[in-house]
Image (cartoon, rainbow, N blue to C red; front, top):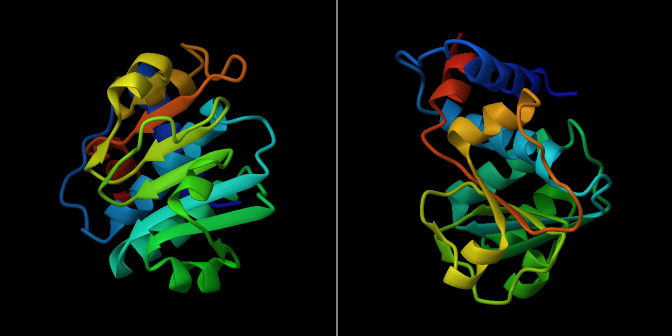
Amino acid sequence: MADWVLAVERAYVDAATRKPPIAEAVPGDLISKARAALGAVASRYLAVGTPRSFGLVVDGTDSVADAALSLEAHRTWFAPTDVRCSGAGADALAAQVGGRVVSLEEALACDIVCIHASLAIPDGALRRGTHVNALAPAVALPEELAKLAVITHEEPGLGELAAGLVDGRQLDELTVFVVGDARVALASLGS
């Protein structure tokens, strides 16, 4: 179990129920770890109970390391048996995490999808029951998806979910988590 993921979850519960910590000077290399933990915490409350498939969408060398960290963070609560990798650098990522290279469509069809690339999600590419973590700053949701999905933003949404102030997944709805500046996560990792 990844203690750093649990520390981020506790920080967002604290942020929802009392004064949140403020990130001071935090090393820049922690942003990847913070985003990975945020995605894992969001998936804990928004993904299906027992996800079998896990999609990672990457766009180059930097995002490959970030995606591998996302899978590590998710393994705090989940044990996916089908890891699918898509995008530029998918070959290296698949070799590193024991996954397989697939098309974007196949990656987006997973139970949990972590997007570490600038990407406009194509209309109709996501199915009901999928949970998407938009962990890159430039993930664009199509207008139709924005109308159909339950979208949770990092603040205040994640803290409210983790603290039990709002409900997470209800049935087989499509859920999307959108990362923000990760300041609460960074503060918890930098302390």
